[in-house]
Image (cartoon, rainbow, N blue to C red; front, top):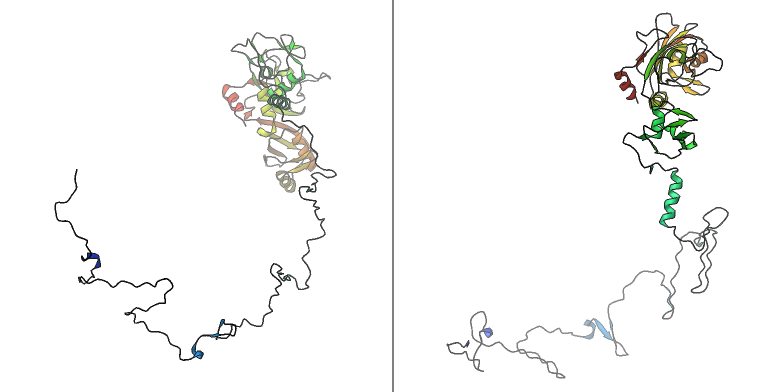
Length: 408
């Protein structure tokens, strides 16, 4: 397709004038062409150049003067930089910079009397070894290889001790762990049962079991020290212990024991929780629940015990104050949780304490110079001997059992 214009073409002949040559005033006059200096020809001033030309009347007015060697130098005086010491220069490439004195005595900087490191030729540098241990250098075994994953697991198993889980088969849904079975029988707590199992004194169906986590079926026969034990029903019994009875299961001297008072209470074998002295009366708990026994006798659970104390003489104010502040006994510091006078004679006190140390109440007053004539435990873990005559017992209610299990 043709794009030729239908109108007349614009002529760009020699005599024509372009719009670009016009001035802003609109005149069609041509601009004067700039004359350039030809190569080698002297500069010729344009006729329309009216710039003033600098003229010098004489040579003194010129800022420079010509020397005898034909070169020029300035007429103005040279700039002065003071009377400072000129820095010495030597030949090219042999410049020496003056050292700066850092101290008034012009002494060199000292870095101590440390031993300089020795250097050898290039590529033969020997670094002094560092002593990592006293009396010798650190040694490395040659041919060291990274241990395999299998050996790592074996070493870890040895450090962890016996296996905590069992690969036992043919286990019924009613099966329980062996340590729990022993604890439920009233032998001891679960933690103590783990020790018995590890020592190899427990057998199941005639086979010694030392594996932790082993489960016992209801039909299995479990023995401890050759004597069969049974997973008995839990029983909880409260006794108002009378005087002249010792707290033990068997007495080689054939003295009266607390077991004589509760032997016919049930078919399950019960064990006393804690101990009371022969001359101490009051609340004493029996059970075949090993876990609860361990919980109630451990001092960290701070099971509350309240005693009624009768002294041989009046307790002075100074000794009463010292008793409440705490006493330093042979086996350590002891302080009652509370101590108050009962009545008006100042010979009877009520003391609350959670320590389970042997004869602790009697020893506290013996330390102050008093003798305990009568000691009666009136409360243990919230249980009291209310409406319970001396030498008599009763079974705990479900509410009392739940309360004991929630302690601590």
